[in-house]
Structure formats: C-alpha cells, structure tokens
Image (cartoon, rainbow, N blue to C red; front, side, top):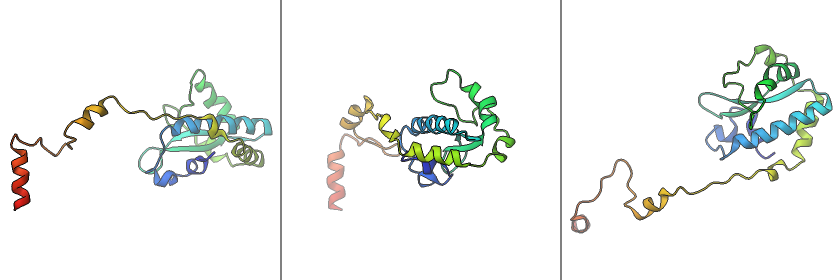
Length: 162
C-alpha cells in the first residue's frame, strides 16, 4: 500500500501537490481490504474515504466507529462501484470520529494489508487525447500568445539583427 501513509494526513502527497492519477481507485482497494481484515480481527473501528475540501491533500482516509460504519455509511454504498467520500452528501457524525481510536486489531489489519501487495491489483492507465496530434503539428501557442503574421520570418530576422 504505497500511498496509505499519504492518505492519513492533510499534508500527504506533497501537501496535495503530487497526487497520482487514479488515487481514488487505490484508496478504494486499500479501504475494502483493510476494513475486511479489521472485521475478521474483531476491530471496533473502520476507515472511510474522505475528500478533504480546500487546500492540501484532498484524498484522505479517516477512522470511524464500527457501529457508524455499519449502520450509517455502508448501507449508502450499496451498488456503488467505488465507495463515496463521507463528505459527498453524507454527514460525518462527530460521534463517529470522536469515539474512534485505532485498536490493536485495526493496526494488525493495516499491517497485514501492507504485506499483500495490493498495488499489483491496480492498473491505472493514462492515455493521450486525440487532440494532441493537432496540438503537436500546430503552432503550440499559449492563451497569451498570438499567431505570427504572414511576415513572421522577416520579423524574426529583424529581431535577431537588433
């Protein structure tokens, strides 16, 4: 779980400046495995995804009580391919956070999940947009630049001479 530690703090992923593509998919796989191992170990807590608003790292995980997870969070995820962040229309109850401290079974679940090479099950693909060919063969201008005039070669020569 190469990104797990970064998901635990708002300063993760270089303070949010180096978040990798597909990070929500990594987080989803990590959470499903960690929480299943925590369930099997008898942990009193669970992790849920939290898309932190504002600056810093947006892709976090937060620890909540097992009861809140099972009664309030999990039923809302029925039919969801990827678990939704607790801030997406879901009010994260202060009780769920205040009563949730990591316990030994959860620590063991995280440790075990880290040994399972979960990242090998993930394939994030980045593709090149079809418009790139047009960009590559075009003038490659930024929004602030203008197309050169018809006499651009002459203008360039004048600039070199001056």
